[in-house]
Length: 152
Image (cartoon, rainbow, N blue to C red):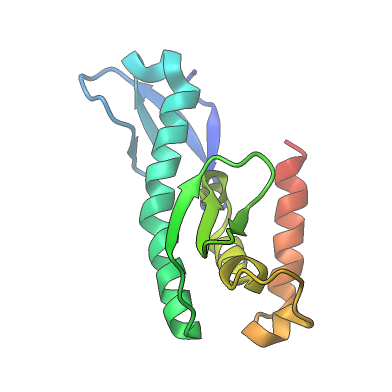
């Protein structure tokens, strides 16, 4: 990891700065401050940081949306899926991909609000967007973000 690299967080690119200090943790101050001693394990360390932030930001939103919709679930957690943004198990557990924390909050909210994920329905609800009152522009923005982030 070198100074000047960047990483996504909540839909924006932020510079990475490798710093000389005795800390064992990444700090985020409108840029990523990564202790030099952790730079050799950069992928693992950054992934763990992202997972912690996802737990802090996504899980409370999920609980709020579920409460607002009158939906109950057994458990919600952040997981390391390769191909899914979110899913719901047959035991009413909701799983979100940790990579979702790289996306803008409107993408997080779209995935969080999606009835296929939140309600665990076995087939799509038509029309999904009007049920949740989500403006179509946000869905289009979601698709654009997905297309751009998958191209990287």
